[in-house]
Amino acid sequence: MVGRTKNQRYLLWLALGTVVMALAMAALLVFELAQKRAIEQATSLRSDSLTALVFQFEREFLRLRQALDKVTERDQPIDTDSLSLRYDIFVSRVTLLRDSPSTSVLDGKPQFSALMPKLAALVTQSDAVMAQVPLDRKQLAALLESYNALGPDVQALTLVADSEVARLLERQSNTMLNQNSLVVALTFAQLILLLVASGALALRQKRQEAERAALEQLTDELREAQFKADSANRGKSQFLANMSHELRTPFNGMMGMLGLLEGTTITPEQSDYIKTAQSSANHLLTLLNDILDISALEAGKMNLKPAPLHLPQLLYDVNALMQTHAASKSLDFSIRLLGPVLPWVLADETRVKQILFNLVNNAVKFTERGSVTISVSHIAKSDGHIEITCVVRDTGIGMDAAALSKLFQRFYQVDSSTTRKFGGTGLGLEISQSLAQMMGGEITVVSEPGIGSEFTAKLLFPSCDAPASEIVNAAKVQSDFAPSVSSIVTQPAINLPTPEPPVPSAPQARILVVEDHPINQKLVGVLLSRMGCHVTFCENGQLAVEAVKKEAFDVILMDVNMPVMDGLTATRTIRAMEGNAAKTPIVVFTADVMNEASEMARAAGADDFLGKPVKVDRLRETIQKYLQSSQLSG
Image (cartoon, rainbow, N blue to C red; front, side, top):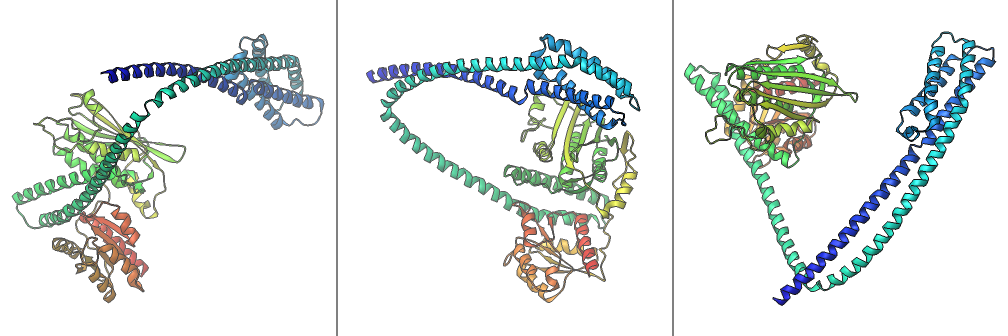
């Protein structure tokens, strides 16, 4: 009990001393801030000196007067350009003298108040004389007399400015000296208090030792907890990478086989079942992609891959996909282009579409009747960038202020009740906002319950020229976008892939598919066979290397995760070969889309990267590209 009383008394005195020191330090801080402000004002006077401003004005006044004097004394032709330059500089100095904040200290001075109206009248007189072509020497002589008459007033202003600045500097110096004296006194008092506090703190040294030991133990425990947390985070990332690969591999086979089944002879009832299965598979794939995107954003591994992008074609693609989605709910859907035709920009097409699809999907999902509209405009920046503004409006259920404040939070859903009508993970808007910020912009929203919502995505891209291979197609697309105030996209995208065209081959493209999964082998084999290709399969990278040594192939589709030898090792081995085999186009075709899979593939020597599950059109376009390239080089 006695020990506790002593400790309380000690803490009381310590607290009192601390309060006194705090007050002293606060006062010291106030004086230091005042001194800093005085120094800043003095510095401002030096950097934006009133005397310098007035001096420059007087100098240009004298130079212009001297130029007028030379013109009126000589019979030689008048140098109009030189005289105009001198006059323009003088007028700029008059403007600075009138508008500069530095001259505010002269507002009450009679010399300044009397001079400014005279200067205004002189400038008006000078403008009238200088505007004549050619210049009249007599009027210039009269103008010179006006300048000579104003000379004493200009000199008087210079003297007033010098004396005013000297007075201000003297006042600032006195203020700083007084404040410095107070600072010294407070510092001395603070030193005494610190000595007293040091003596008091020395009495607590033993207790501090015990506290330090406890703190070290806690630090060790926290370090261990941090290590476990880092290990768990690495385990989570590895788990997501493994699950991504393991889920995408059967997804590739399932979605591919559903697509092949849809192309066979089936009944309307079977067609409905297939479409339902495809819709569910696509929904599951969307959820998987959202989770992987969130993981990549958390790890800072989400990278944009900009390439020349024709924005009207992208809008056509969005319209082609979203028109059907909106029609399924009997909603009106349109895309309006405000202003001139959108230019080519450097952007990641996939991520831009992801933002628009997320916003439009949400708009359609929460709208039961009415319309969903996309309005697109752009502004050209002076630094060569283009700011694209996409506004998605709907007539849906809308949101209140509470919902808007949480809208971009992870897993938040406007319809969050246990009997909620709308699905979703609540990740799409967070991902879209993160992507928009990576593109130099942001997404904002205004909404009213029962009226609808308006999402505005502003994105910033560098402008670029159209690729030579796209000029014809771009001109065709742009012809549909007349440079009017409003153009409505009501037709499907131009050059949409047609069903299963054969890959151009001479006479038959030879494709090596390196894949260990039997279902994926079957799927890719059917797809390539329908394209008119001859397909050879290998179950691992070692067999692929041996096959390339024995036979020439036009394109190699290379999986990554395989037994015996993985795909990246096989790619590096093929690239190290001699002869034409090392030049064979290699397209990495894998379900591993995390851990910088694309960058690792290209670093190993791959020409392209396709993630599973892949769209048939995307596979066909890739095969066609490298077949045409090999035929041209051959």
